[in-house]
Length: 223
Image (cartoon, one colour):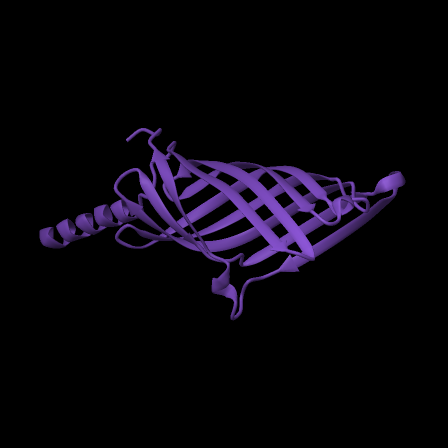
């Protein structure tokens, strides 16, 4: 009887260790940075053309552990881009573009242990993105976009050490989206487009939309 009690107690303690993904009050930080430069030049005698594009994006999300296996938090993002296109034989067709975008929203994530330091997770996320693009084109002077989306996606995490999580995110299980585009041309002409959409990545192309990231666990709870 005593031996069974010891084994039962050890089993309970082991299960508690396996399920203790976080300590309540921990903060989990994730961030991303993307910088791109693209240059193209054609010296064809009949059509000389050069194009330069620069883009930069930054994102950050911060989650708070309200349970040992659950995070809830918010995310923010911002980006800026500029492009320049020049035609040596047709200067009137030269085209410049400048754009920026901001976004933000909330997320909640639930973890389920599947082995030592490995976890399945499901995340729900909803947010809003706004963008504006100014052009020197004769047909399109300004474009504004507004996107509202909500989705659910699964993934796998691996906890390395005490302070880092490696994430492998799969495509959206389901996604709902609203998109509104307003275009302005010369002479104050204006066109608007509105789209509603529902999508799911289930199917043969499911693994084509994946993401890899790392998160930093900052202890904040009582041990």
